[in-house]
Length: 338
Image (tube, rainbow, N blue to C red):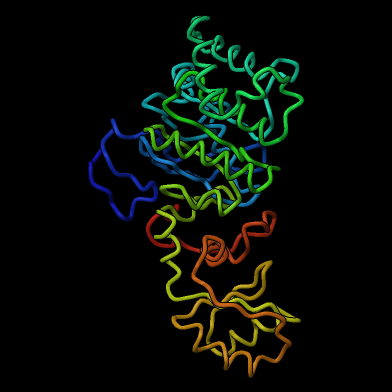
């Protein structure tokens, strides 16, 4: 494999085999008539914090589960840390840590015992498991709740214990599947701060989320929808694809407003927040639009492109509109899945 990146490569591949943490080739997954993954090609580099961003039902957890050896693909292959996720499942599991959407703690055991038990599961010696547990209790600020039963912890505390359990065996790669679902903003921020520190120390992080703010700190992001990767790049490069600025209008009739704009040569998108319009100079366009728009405008704002705007532009719908029909589009530049 070449050591230089091909900008047309949808996997975002760069670096030699020794630098690759995850590689997926032509992955498909079918559940009867449901085609959950439709030819995923992907490369994640070692030491990278990589986010898979998409709405519910996009295929995030299916892809996550294949890479974490929990599912077999219907077609294609995946390798994690150089090992095939089907034929060498045990070798992969020895080197990864996982935090699932649903809590997996032993509720009646103390926090300290949960960590110790996980260390034994990873075949650490009793002494090593105890030492590692104490280290993580200190590192993740869990010393005050070390003797508390896991079932009596707050949601944020439980998630930090889940992360500590995933780190007990000092994994090379950390899988996080919607790991902060249901947490408040402060708990989410604290959790991701710890995950980022793990990445900064050289660990690889692969996370799934439908929250833009969680994906934003990642080194690279893959936007996924209906089982396909639509785009893959750094957060800023994805936002730069939009070009110009964003004019967002909330009106009394967004569909009518969008139709009026199309008649005048614009290319609006209608999402949950209103009518989105990408133009080179939105401030210059806004006065004319407000003066002539045939429906009442409740709110108008101008902002720099966000990941939400990128997703809306690629699909014609917002990230939270998980069940809407996908727009028929061709490849959309570097990172588009074929």
